[in-house]
Amino acid sequence: MTAPQIDRTSPTPLKRAITGKLLFVFVLGDVLGAGIYALVGEVAGEVGGAVWVPLAVALAMAMLTAASSAELVTKYPRAGGAAVFAARAYRSSLVSFLVGFCMLAAGVTSAAGLALAFAGDYLGVFIEVPSITAAIVFLVVVAALNARGITESLRANVVMTVIEVSGLIIIVILAALVLGRGDGAPERVIEFQQDTTPALAILSAALLAFYSFVGFETSANIAEEVEDVRRVYPRALFTALLTAGLVYVLVGVAVSIVVPPEQLSASSGPLLEVVRVADVGIPPTLFSAIALIAVANGALLTMIMASRLTYGMAREGLLPPALAKVLPGRQSPWAAIVAPTAVAVILCATGSVAALAETVVLLLLFVFVSTNVAVLVLRRDQVAHDHFRAPAVLPILALVTCGLLLTQQSADTWIRTGILLIVGLLLYGLTRIVSVRQLASSQVN
Image (cartoon, rainbow, N blue to C red; front, side, top):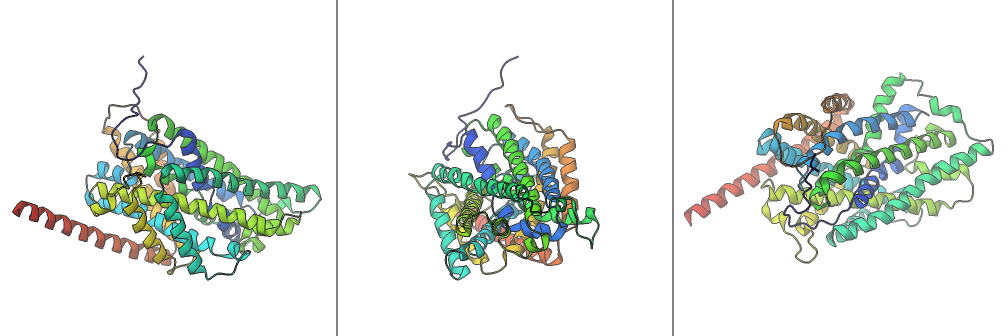
């Protein structure tokens, strides 16, 4: 049998600078971010002491859609991710635009939420600054680092990922120390809220926990910059998700042992509560610094995704072509960095961290439905190169899980998401009008 042909040289104006190790760290850093640092208390409020259970359920749900993503990315390795897959599957520029816009809106909304999380209680340990001001400055700094280039951004991600993982390991070690001195309550890890059935509590909490895993889909938008993407991408994606899932489950067990769920749910810095209750000499300022780095890392990777998606949609003619401009020296899509950053700045003033997180999940569920349907539709589309192939049952199960999560969304979240989609439709209409006028003008000339 001949070895599969690996295409390392397909033409692209973007720099192929992402190795398998960098991609693994990219996904791990994006998943191990503000979700666990900021929202584990919200999960405890929904489910009770068994925080680890919805985290494990959310991991399983994420792995199903990740399998579909791995097949499509290795089959069509181009910037643009879900929007490119939708364009091939549905042959509709409107559907492709809406899928891409949902992904883009989710990324920008998430970045805005992370900026607010950065400017909240963790930053308050060091300095009292108006949250909106701190969030805006934070987004500008993230944009500047993104514009320096993908290599510099991912090198910064390596350092920040090591720091944020160390913070989660500290939480697990603190729980062990608390148990060792005879404190804590290990029985809480199997306790659920008394005012609801365990199944409903797990499903409701899994919606929040799912936000902690959704960072994996951002990697599809940098596929064009990955070396040997067809071999490297699936391995890095699945390994990073499983690693993150293991860390999350351990953290879920640890926080339940040390801190009662009602205390966790009342805090906007729930992991800081573990440090305080354990009281083993770790300064709150040290752990707050780690938490801030974790949030910053999540925002950086999210904005890398948003900029690459904007660039890919502009190159496909779904957004104005001016957004596809690339810095000659850095080879980074500067226009596609500036535009999402400006929108994120506006969103910072329009909602809380929790409200923005819920909106992100709903927008991404639309994307995941499209991706899982697309992988089935495109099975009959044959390509010349080898690629990852997911068992057909996985995208079907993924669609079922997406449907379950959609039923858990609040009316306010549906309204907020609907407004964003209306804005997207207006933008699509304007882009089409401009394109038609440009075409007419060129024909006259």
